[in-house]
Structures are given as C-alpha cells and as structure tokens.
Image 1 (cartoon, rainbow, N blue to C red):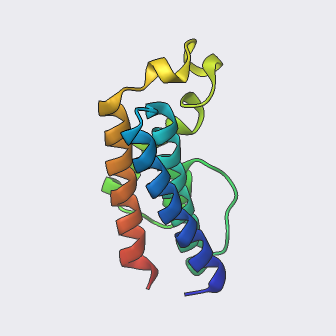
Image 2: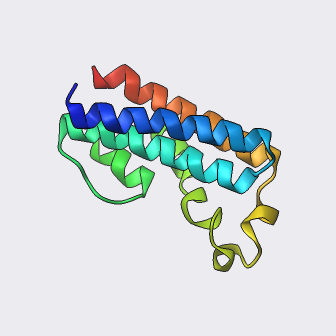
Length: 124
C-alpha cells in the first residue's frame, strides 16, 4: 500500500473513533459527520491505490469511480447527507443537533464501518 493511502486509512480509523466517542456523548449530528468522514477517507485511500486521488465529498460519486458494487453505492447514498446537514442549519432549516438522534447516528456509524471494511478488503 502506498504511504499516502496508509495515511488516509489511518485518518479513517481516527474518524471512526471520533464518531463512536461522539455517539457516547450524545452529540449525534457530529457523530454522523465523522462517520461520513471515515468512509470518505477510506474510499480516497482506495482511489489513490487504483486511480489517483479524486477531490470531492460525494461518497456515491467517489465509489462509482471505483466501480463499487450496488450495496456499497447504497451505503454511500445513505451516508452522503451528514456531510452537509449534520453541520449547517440552512440545509434542513433546524439546528443539526435537533435533526439527528441516536438511531440516525448509529446507523451512520454502522454504515461507515461497512464501507471502511469493504475498502480494507479491496485495498490489498
């Protein structure tokens, strides 16, 4: 694995840890955002290995560039919203901390874990 990919994967793991810690402290919107980040960084690590770094935050687009299977693309679609609506009031018209609850945050975390696992299985 390339050094740059290793760094992206390392940070992906750190983001998963942050998402888990934030979930425990009931900061659900922040947990969901860090779940997105964990998946994004893992996907970017695989992109670096296969094609080169592609900029952007749309997990579905990045995963399609890798030829990811439909189940991973579905997970990316599910995890895309927290990149924006977990941080910005104007996205949903309410504070993100009111938009996210435990169920939504844990679903984001578990989805991110599955995406990261998929990347680990394919990065070599």
